[in-house]
Structures are given as C-alpha cells and as structure tokens.
Image 1 (cartoon, one colour):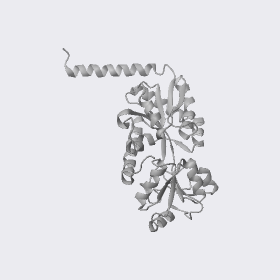
Image 2: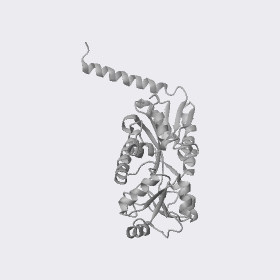
Image 3: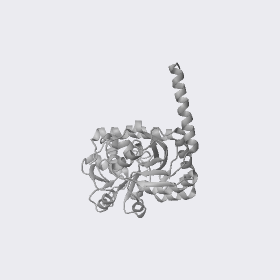
Image 4: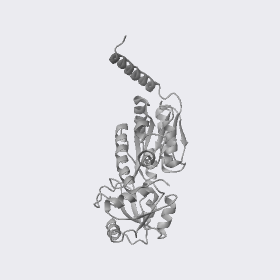
Length: 322
C-alpha cells in the first residue's frame, strides 16, 4: 500500500500535469468576459478596448457579457460560480471585492473564491469644489470645515460607493465633519454641486475632468498616489499633507479560484501585451485611465491592502449600502 506522503506527492504531480495539459490546449473555444456593470460605463468600455487584442493573441473570440446589479456583486458571483477553466473570466472594479464584503452579505468570499489575474488600469480620484463654495484649495476646505463642523456637504454617487467612502476617509484623516448627501449616480450629484446645493464631490476624475479644465469646478487635490497626466498641475493629497487620503478606482481581470495557474499566466501575459498597444493605450486614455499591469500576486496584494483600508472606514462610520 502506498505511503501517505507518496500518495499526496503522486496526487500533486497529477494536478500539475493536468494543469499543464489544460494550459497547452487553452483556449480551444471562445472565452466569456463578464463585466459586472451596465454597458457604456468605464468597466464596459475598458473591456471592449482590450478584448480585440486578447482575441487576436488567444486566437479565439472574446464574448463580452454585461451582468450589472448590486454594485457589481451579481456579475462577480456569476464569474466565481463558473467552471474554473479559464473560459469565464471577469473584469471588475474595486467595490465588489474590497468594500461590499464589509457592508452586506455576499454569496462569495473574496479570499477563498477569487483568483486575481492582472490589474488592467487605474482611474484617479479627485476632490472638487463647486463654483459657489468659495474653496480654492484643500487647505481652504479643511480650515473652514474644522471651525464649522456639519456645515459643509459633499455629494456622492450613492451610499456605500467609493465616492461616499472617500469623503468619510477625508473626514477621518483631516479631523473634520463633512455631511454626506447620497445621489443616484455621479451625474445628479455634479448637477447639484454646480447649482450650489452641495459644496463638494470626491469622484473619479473622468466624471469631472472637462468641468475642471473649463474652470466650472475647482480641483482641490488628486486622491491617487501620483499626479494625473490629465491634470498635471493638480497636486495630490499626499503632497498637501494628507498621505492617508488615497482613493481611486481600478479595474482588473479575475477568475474563479482553482483556475489553473498556467491558464491564468497565459491570460495575464496576453493582457500585458494588449496594454502595450498604442491603440489600446489611446482608448484607455479617453476613459481618463492609466494602464497598470502587474502579476496576479501583485493584484491580490493590492486587493488585500484595499480591504483593510476600507474596512477601517466602514467600521468607523457605519457606512452601508442603501
């Protein structure tokens, strides 16, 4: 009878051999790319920007399927409940992986069920003030808010969204009390800020880029680690003395846990090739995004770090999805 240690070794070698064989034949048919948001949004546009290059490299069609709802959780859950063979992957943003798990019950566990493949791109966050607010700098805002707690209001795309949590993070790190006003999307929040009903927003940069360039709103700070090439003169929160006020959106490819490592490595490699294409770079630039390719391990580490940060904010403020 085979000893237990040899039995496990034999089993492990069998798995390695099966994984290698699967990768060698992959892909033998079309690959399904699920976007957990509605058509026309940044995730959808990013998926459609990289899909043609992936299709050419893999020599198979890439079929994009939009499954929106529940802040991205429905689409992510669809990916994670699919066979772990590389034929169903997803392109998601941070919400369904780093903040929703701490605000609602989800049918999946990120650490257990998700295999990060590669982060594709990031989109800078920004703090902007309305034309009637009188705020010309982040220092103006913080000084005013510290002496008048509860008198400055910021609009968001909805309770529990990144645009909400970013404002709560600023409250915590700056020692101020901005009042949150949720809207059903960034567009109505922007309209109310332009009208003077709220003084601030902390959205993704593309949502207000044209208004910043036109001088319709005042850009106070970039909330990403680095300045944005789209508004290079706008300083970051780190430069302005608030290094913990970091909030931005990213998009990356994921697969169900158990997807063979060699298959994930193949998808990662062709994605990195796509992100070096001038045509793809130009399309990502139109979204206000910056390519940020990296290994699956780097992507997983980033997800874990983001989870810790936003859990602290959610626990401290009681933020929830409504």
